Image 1 (cartoon, rainbow, N blue to C red):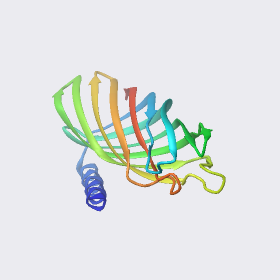
Image 2: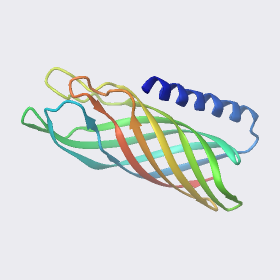
Image 3: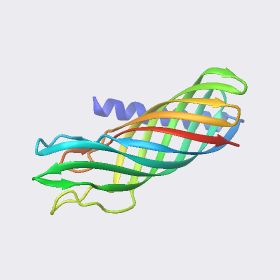
Amino acid sequence: MKTTLKTALMGLTLLGLSIAAKAQEVTYGLQVGSNYNMTSFGNKSVKDNNGKVGISVSGFARIGNELFFQPGLGVSLLRKEYTFDKNEKTPKFYQINLPLQIGYKLINDGDFNLRAMLGPQLNYDIKTVKSTATTDYKKFSFDGRIGLGLDISKLTLDAYYSHGFSSIDKTLDAKNRTVGIMVGYKF
């Protein structure tokens, strides 16, 4: 199942690149917002797993009109809190995010657009974080991302969910799960 989903997401990325090659309309924008990290842990020794609010800032290019490709580049602060081996952990992750999404305008009415988007997201942790005394969280991770967006003239409002496909720590069997809301301006 995971391989099929990863293959589908990579296929969507390739579709996006072909859209970008044919498209003539390009819109750029900046967004800022908050995220809520709800890491899932497969290790049953992890207790009191609580999500925390973080922040995100990103830029994007929207290539195409009704069907579009939207690559982005952003930075995020992700926070979480949990107990492992009777020790409370409150790690912070400073990430560079690269979402590569295919989108479709469900409503395409000039200055008012409702968009749906789907695609992979690659993450790189800027700072090494210790999970246990002997292991670290991985630097690279791979997520699937789905979202809805609204454009009102030059303003944007996006809500998204990212689901981790790669384990970010083998000891904890941890995977990213993040929801976020972004507001922005397109040029």
